Length: 173
Image 1: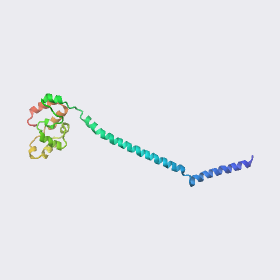
Image 2: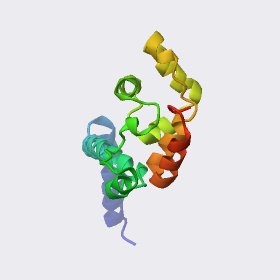
Image 3: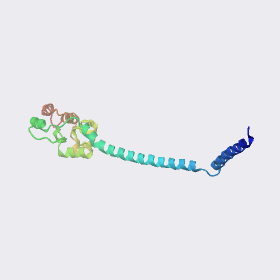
């Protein structure tokens, strides 16, 4: 075998390996800087995507509230049915439909964020009394014992039952 050819090839291979290792060790950080640049670009893309998703979520939440409120009133108000029973036009969520509640008491309830028949139907009698007490002495004489139940009938559209009960009541008592 000819050692003359094998020795230069072996020396060349060793030099190439040493050159590669020295290049990586001393300044050939191009691979690392490329990786860092790519990671920074990926991070920027992720941050942009996160911002976009947060904006979409905020928009969806804003749209959800009216939709949820609409679906929460699953019982539709039938103005004609109410008019047929009471003989007059009834406005939706008019608390004065409840026997014993007039415009001033309705205003008190509105001031306490009770603005619908459903909200009034979910109030306890104690809550109703505290609303009345907040209006002063002239409102404390009223007895709201039946008001939540009457409001529930109005909310559910049970107009005939409500009118029959109100005929039996004396000023809501």
